[in-house]
Image (cartoon, rainbow, N blue to C red; front, side):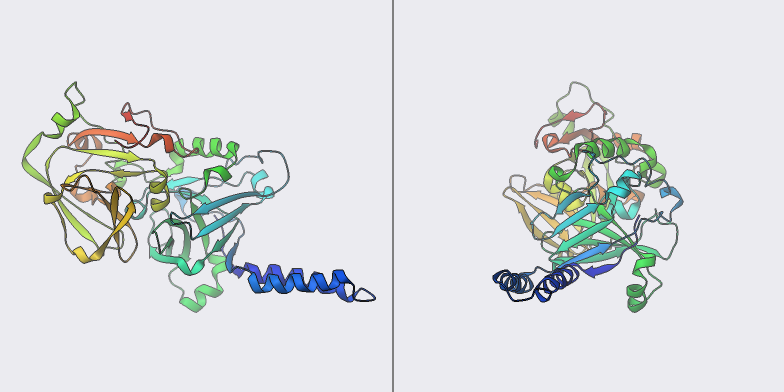
Length: 405
């Protein structure tokens, strides 16, 4: 992981360029046409320079005992040139762009490794895959929102996750680990020593990722040690659940199977501002979606959704969420405080609402994946044509559909 120092990138860069220009100009015996051109050029650069923020970081071991091997097993540069690899991450609306630089010396020393945290807090906010970074510059930082929460992968109780998202589209972009014991002034002074950042893999443009890195990250994300808190003991019961009955009966017929007693579930966002209750009266399903929008809004390679009858879904405080048009065919309900994406509502399915499975309260779910499977009529993977290049589909025997159902 990485220590973080925030510096205004454009001021430092322009200062160095101007010093270089004036050095050339004042060392000339007389003002030439080229000298005037240089003065004009740098005056224009100062006027039009875009604002950005840079994370200048140094590599550091993570503090959690369960995350101590996160920087192992890196890979050499894909073309053998001793130059930085440049990645780009962009939110769904396109207004916030992260330019990520992975220096060659860190790559060649095999320090870069991706991993996923499935702890309760990360799952509630976004089940995310993370990339420890060396340098990031961010455009339009005024559009960045920040939400602070816990993370079970952080061993010290004083460490919290400051999760950054786009205020306009709610895309989850990166997380900064900070010291909650420090006040704002001390936290600012001690950032270089105490903070480090993790970029969410979901919004990273796949075209900027070298093929060798896609293969490497794909292998890393398959390994158990790189999937923290992914177990039933850590309450992730729906993640590996499979339907107990997959006979020749059609899905629509299985979907109509009802219960004598309704199953009462609850859920909500990570900050707790929006909460809901579900009265499950019949079998439901899980759809793991790999579309580009789910990448960006969650910050992870996929999101999992389940259909619930609208009449059996109830918000405790309906004003805590905003219904946002995200596609021509559907809308999403998003928490007004932490910007967690809670549900999907499709125009052609007015009688159904699709909450995100990560928001479910595990204490109200069945006690294991096998029991959870008894409540499912179907599990499928959708939008598989849009699967991130750094991820493989699980071999679970379930349907794999190229696009939506």
